[in-house]
Amino acid sequence: MSELRLSSIETRGVPGKKRYAMVIDLRRCIGCDACMVACKAEFDVPLGVFRTWVPYRVVGTYPNVRKQFLPRLCNHCDDPPCVRSCPVGATYKVEDGGFVLQHYERCIGCKACMASCPYNARFLLPKHRTYTDITGVVDKCTFCHHRVTQGLVPACVQTCIGRARIFGDLNDPASEVSRLVATLPTQVLRPEEGTKPHVFYIGADRSLTEHGRAVYSAPEVLDADRAAFNRNHKG
Amino acid sequence: MGDYNVFHHMPWSGAYAIYFFVIGISAALFFFSALSWYRDDFKSLRTSAFYVSFGLMAAGGLLLIGDLAKPMRFLNILNPFYLNFTSPLAWGGLNLMSFGAVSVAYFYMMRKKDDTNSRRLAVIGSLLALGLPIYTGFDLTVHQNRPVWNSPLMPVLFVAMSLVSGAAVASFLAGRNEKLLATLRQFMLWSAGAVGAMLVSLLGTTAYGGAGQELTFMFMTSGALGAVFVGLGILLGTAAPIALLLAPYGRQQNGVLLAAGLILVGGMALRYSILVGGQIVQTYF
Image 1 (cartoon, each protein chain N blue to C red):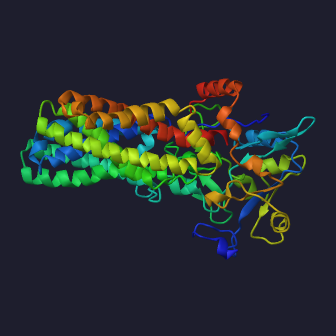
Image 2 (tube, rainbow over the protein chains, first blue to last red):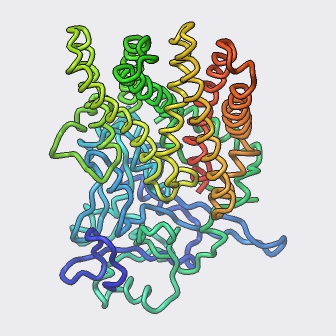
Image 3 (tube, rainbow over the protein chains, first blue to last red):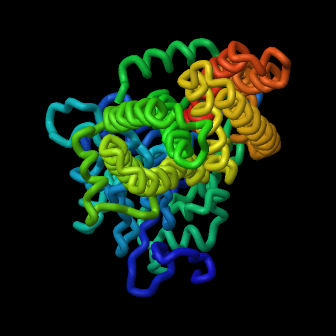
């Protein structure tokens, strides 16, 4: 594994260190969005923004069509560009476990981390929230760090009805994620960016993971939706 | 179709483009003010260029702070325990504040008529001014996932755009000083030419890049940004002023000022479209 490591921040394959990862088996995902709901409930994620979300693409020719789901979240990269780009060190990587987390009290809201993330995993929290005073800073999925350190799995993994999401320590050869990554063909999103993402997909078609050409001529209804979104979510 | 995805924000809005624009002009005007200590034809620009440079730097700084989601935390940039030097923003923040401090000292020395120290500060300030467009370019370049931005051309392109926009503003400050206008015309011509050459390279590499780059090229040329980038930025703001400055009319004062006006429109359009162009496709991912 050592030949994969290019920078000192990477912890995959480092003896004595944990390196958590998630495997998402797309053959098992039914698009029920329970993971999104569990995440929203766990973190009181505001309306309009998501720590995890489940986009889909309809593929095939009628009548033989189906929805391909691609659950998304922060990829907790081994070499995360967001950590590099934050001017005040508000984004950091936990060495033991590989979690990429936020110091909310340091974040100045410059959005450099959002610009640097190839996965759109980051978002700006609104200026007013009901139950917490964490406002106006950048937020993202934490791999449920608070749960994992208590020996639990992330909320989305816990709730997944089809057991499509599997979580564990990739540095432990006996873990389920290690076995899956070692024995099945897996894909990661945008490997060409060199971020070493730690969310692995089983059964992801490249038509799902690439930029779709359809965005150039998006239907007008999408423009109206986007305009409404931008009007209501100025960050 | 039948695709579904949640919407994503463009992290950096048009306010950043305005910041890039004013800070580029501010840097170049400081350079012209500093040049006045070494070249007589720039002498009439010494104070006027400096005042405009200082005003634009202050406006740019406020714009940058105002665009932060937590404006009062801009002081975190000054905290040595927080600073992360792998981020160009950290270098940029320090560069901007050093430039501001040197500008204040330069103003003080000029008022005191201390030519020796003014001259020294002019050189130091010019180097810091050069750092401003360079760091803004690096701000974009380092994001490896962004089409258009992730090009080694960016810092150099921003230096050239800074020079051409600064020379355009300076030509409005030059009045009827024909010798100075002739020099500024040369500055505009060469730096606009450099901008044009770099844009051709940038478009070429973007058009032949991966899926995201190709889509970005389409958005920037024939899509939502086509009118701003190609129409205002390239044709009206770069090609037309070059043609105008090369024509006999472009050697007269009115011709230079007309070209300067077009260059300023183009400078803003180019910065805006480069900033937004690098983000459009990603919002759909």
